[in-house]
Image 1: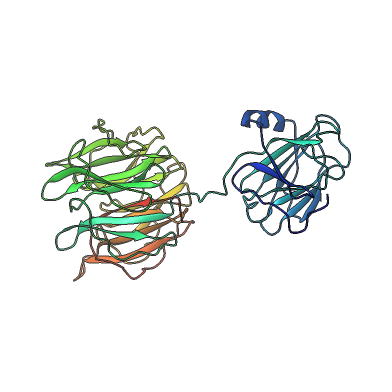
Image 2: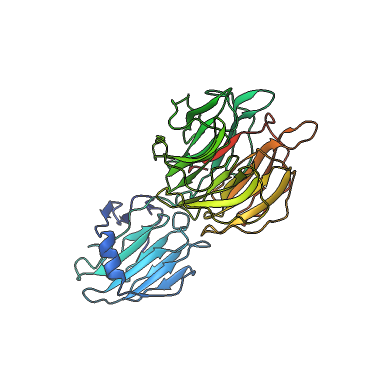
Length: 441
């Protein structure tokens, strides 16, 4: 195939094959194969080891994962082919948007054009399936897998909000995708403490319930830019000392807490548009000052808390929002801890009453690990959230010192290792909540 100097065309995010002729005319065709057809054909393909070279020669009947992390790849197609011959190329590392692949049709036609055309695929995450038709049309893409450039995966940013200083507050502090906490943002909605927060809808967040002189069921939605909305009229039992977590990839639930003068185990499901449902009858031991987080990509877990004493039991939540019975506790019983996901599918509980800093890791099947020696300032009534796609952050809280309202944070890497204190930003406070939001870094 003879390249056209200075005249190559890269298509991103369209699923199109780009061909540029010697006359400069741009021709495109949309891949017509469905996912089902792709999967049926792929079943008879012999998949090869991952290709990392800058050049390779393809053989009919094979499938090739092409890793272009370090370099682009020029692929020479067979010099001869028979009707029905097929080849599949797939973006192994989702890097074709940076280093694409170029197909050299090696004397045969490609989609009806001779090999004076340059054919490039430059969309992150793309897969291309081609079949040989005849001498006229040559190789034809029957699926070129419409995808966008590689998406940023996981929750990228976070928000701490509300809580108690010397009085109840509605201040918020945004957290960047690199874990940097921003200065105070003027509060929106009813100032309150002892509330909960979680992500919902994939890239948004919600604060809910809490105490502002009386128990509340108000909620405040947070859009995917981190802007907090005005109060939404509360639904369900007004309460405080509860927790919240996401489940099912785009929904959430609030659960447990203290209502009036007694503990409760009721939950309230949150739709992927942020609508809170009426009470679901509680399952498991009613308790307050619990912590909750997502795990396993689509499930959730409530853990620890206070009944008439400190407990460490947990309750798993299915990907349809159903809460299971108590699981015997692991680790130090405590309340007023915080929890967050890390590593895309795992989680951890951390800190808690008695001004401790130990953590307990949660596997991607919801198994809680024994205590991990604490790092950073021991404290309780803090917040935690995921950020950066696969990391987490603990922040703020009450450390029992002479100035107990603190604002330091502790970053958690994607292996669940907690870092030492980062100097606090914003107004020190406790009994606040935190949640992740945004797919955009």
